[in-house]
Amino acid sequence: KGVRIINCARGGLIVESDLKDALESGQVAGAALDVFEEEPAKDNPLFGMANVVCTPHLGAATEEAQVNVAIQVAEQLSDYLMSGAVTNAINMPSISAEEAPKLKPFVTLAEQLGLLAGQVTASSIKEVNIEYAGEVSELNCAPLSSAMISGLLRPLMSEVNMVSAPAIAKDRGMDVAETKRGSTGAFDSYIRLVVKTENSERSFAGTVFSDGKPRLIQLTGINMEAELAPRMLFITNNDQPGIIGSIGSLLGTHGINIASFNLGREKPGGSAIALIAVDNEISTDVLDEVMALEQVTQAKALVF
Image (cartoon, rainbow, N blue to C red):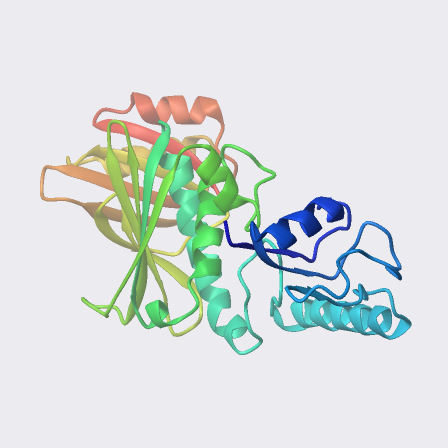
């Protein structure tokens, strides 16, 4: 008892005669409406009641309103196309014109980190932790998280984008958490993505250098500095002499040119990783030969 009802959606959602009875009995303490069962509402049983506020249902029905709405939509679309600013979007985080240029390289970094993690993670993802450290933590990080989740899901579904990614992740049962912290370590700003499955946990981190280009600084928890390329080969192996030469020779035999060869390891003789940028597509047969090399434990062809 004592509820107050507001209807600014559609006329007919409320039976006005029933509402009048409820208002008179005190079951409903008050009501406010700008939509009615019959419009225009010239004679209505609710008019004149002390505990009811009624206003005309104008919406965009006037010529002036329709013109102004059209202008506003055109201006907002122009802002997005010209500067990347997003205003009053229903299903996407807002981005101001001032924020857009600052966010752009970090959006690229976030998407690439997600795409990298999605391609090297074999089993179903249960939990995603995103950490923003340093200067990037002071920015509007909502678009960055959306871009990262979009990249993470893209190997599974090509149609995913920044708008749909958060909802799809939720539907798939992914628990997404976001944290911010001050700058630590050698970099003024970085983003770390931690992906958890039923059997494993892997972390990926990257930063944006002064040239505005994203750089990978950690891959599967191992420190490594690398620039991501359109085609890459990711390899995990035991850290033993000769493996680099074996990989290079095998790729050369198949006419695959190496653009860059990036390495990292946990400790001497322990787990090691290689991220190799190549100029040619890597076929399944080549991957099988790489996997057959002694000490290699995983090989994945990556596309960015």
